[in-house]
Image (cartoon, rainbow, N blue to C red; front, side, top):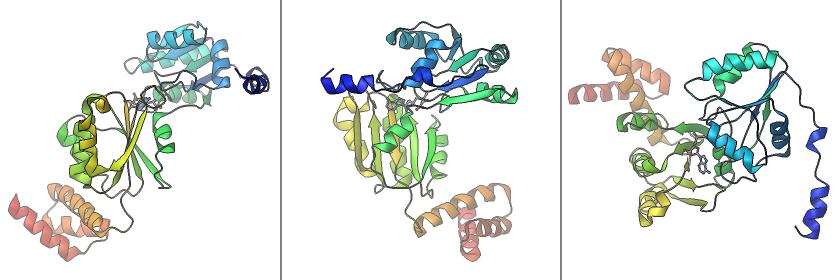
Length: 300
Ligand code: SAM
């Protein structure tokens, strides 16, 4: 620590001066890589919590050890959330403070936790968020994509057909799309995105955020497969993929969306009714949709 940083440290606000009500569940964000990315309030609450409900007790016990702490842990993962929620409610009713954490980042964001929060709220007890890292917001903040809005998609389905229809459903969304992806699927996911969205949209591949090999690469979607193939290391680690939204008023995209709606309706309804409803939903011309529906029927 140099002189400036030690002076700054002595000026840090004292988290012990904050209030930490009893009978409350503290939804507490933990680092997504860099162990220093935790708030003063989170550290203080962890040091006084009666128990820490966590996704994986080994991971959380290691994390607590990094901060010189050892707290009672409650396993709260996707397979036992309902039962553990009931236990947590009982403990809170008895006046305890319980912290809820996941393996990394913000609980209940593509992670377990929502059922526990729901049960605690349903029991009329207090839920207090202690904000901190989330991979989605971290990637967005460093992306330079200018869209005011973003849509969080999280993980896509792993099966190719379902993944493609999930992507098709997003073609006309104008907000930046935010995906989570695992290393073993990053290549097929970016290939599928290229098929569905075409080469021109900008994409950000944000890898290993806050870690030693952090890499935030921005390019056109058409260049992403080659960039990933160029170096095997680029396919390693955890990814957030940000995809630029659809341009406003893009008539091609409106047509793609109309076609998608028409195809869905044609599976359930007679041709004329499907075309008429698709026109009402999408604002496209009824006659054009009717002609397209006839073509689709012929092709089937
Ligand atoms: N709850 C977490 C959050 O708030 O971001 C997300 C948990 S989810 C199970 C894990 C996924 O988040 C990873 O597969 C990856 O897509 C993304 N992720 C988590 N940490 C990351 C990091 N350091 N760099 C890039 N992506 C990360």
